[in-house]
Length: 217
Image (cartoon, rainbow, N blue to C red; front, side, top):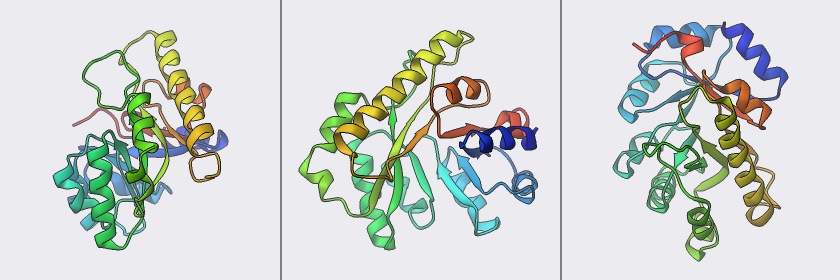
């Protein structure tokens, strides 16, 4: 299954983020040996413990909700933080990245689902953040794009509508805030159950776990 999905995404020009939460280092190594280098984790403690024992060329993405008091643990090595859902969190990432002498790529997470449980910014909150003087003073974060999770539903029309909305937000921000920044290019959307819909709506990064590793343990 890995070869099929990896080939499909590569052909579409989409980055595969293998979601390895709850999976053992041995399971991660199986995909690593097949060529996968980008892995996504939801929890800081789990991410740190795996990073310590797995190959150093793995690019670790934090894709779950991140508490500000835990940023310091992943700032030295995180390749990307996909779940920036508040101004307070972005400030903390910048602060901790500065201590490590790093610039950390980040995605702004938007609330696109109709479910109340998902984290994420509104477009108005993102605009307020990006147009502030304080944001222009941040030197150790780089906003590389947007991320969102669709409603967990069998209604493919609704899922497509939500992904379409995220792409529209991306295009709006690109035009108004990042027109001169070629690094603002990522739309992280699509998981095991809905990545095919996300591809049609312009995803550049798909976060896939179950199809690669099997059901969560």
